[in-house]
Amino acid sequence: MEYAEILHRCFRCGYCKLPDDYTGLNCPSYLKFRFETFSPGGRMWLLRAWLNGEIKTTPRFAEIMFSCATCANCVAHCVFPKFKEDILNAFLAGREALVNEGRVPPAVRDYFKAMQIHGNPYKLPEADRGKWADGLGLETFSGQEYLFYVGCEGAYDERGRKMARSVAGLFKDGGLSFGILGVEERSDGNEILSLGESALFERMARENLRKFQSLNIKKIVTLSPHAYHAIKNEYPKFGSDLQVFHYSQVLENLVRKIPLQPKETPFRVTFHDPCYLGRHNKEYRAPRKVLTALRGIHLVEMDRSKENALCCGGGGGNFFTDLLGSGPDSPARARVREAADTGAQILAVACPNCAKMLEDAVKVEELEDQIRVMDLAEIVQSPLF
Ligand code: SF4
Ligand code: SF4
Image (cartoon, rainbow, N blue to C red):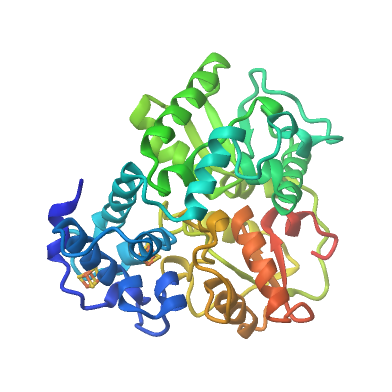
């Protein structure tokens, strides 16, 4: 297994499951399960024991390996600079080894099956992929400056569709030159890769690149930070030289061109950094720039933000496989309590997965009267601000 040689270097000090100031638990799977094997250090030692043949491949072992949300808190906070960058890569290599053995949890197997049969995890027809844009009058891509890529969540998930429509509406209002692929769009494959199916990911990436090249696409703006990450950082391994943006990075400039009504009473808003935009790609500024461009907003930070942000638990395929499960210690519920503690009325998000995870958690925590989850584009479009 690739990265096997780094596993012994971890001395299980445990700092990687914490934020900078060592308060709170920042590894979502450890927060939820509170067993050392679900922490980064524990998971690393478990993987080592497995590779050494000291433990067998059991459903429990597979569950532990696949419950990592790939949030990269451990990468950001491991005290050992010489190998911190490869911690998550080692976990992904462990998952790949399990995929190759055919020993993955049932929920992961079902995810792969849905992707192979339907091309999307919702098991919906490919013919419905473009429905999110119905009635918006958007142009099909034919040489515009940007391709707006919405991904499976933007195309099929009700919450994601709402977000995709808001973002597209703002792009239109701001006069952005963009087109969409609609029914021709295909999954970016980020979750496939994070679940260890690298061969399938490569096929998906190459197919997408062929499509992008045939249309002479140069710039892509994505709805999801997950697609942004895959296309920006993984596709170049297969020859891509695309310029890739997350929609907050395009909105940051566009928001100044959209006429906005200044409001008398500012709303308190706090922003939840998506792991695949923040820790994975170090973009903390653009979403905050969008928010602070609105005069009706007073931005407040949660105790854990930017590099220290607590993941909502939706990364690494968990949005679909739900291996982290529910309960008061689920990361999404812990995160909305933290957001509500700031006194913010709005919890701003910039990822369709975060939007759904956190919106559901607000309901379960019965915080609906206190705080509302809104995407950046929905906030910009809202008559409230
Ligand atoms: S991964 Fe790094 S921070 Fe975490 S337990 Fe191992 S050495 Fe310590
Ligand atoms: S990537 Fe996140 S969930 Fe996975 S072990 Fe590291 S801190 Fe925990």
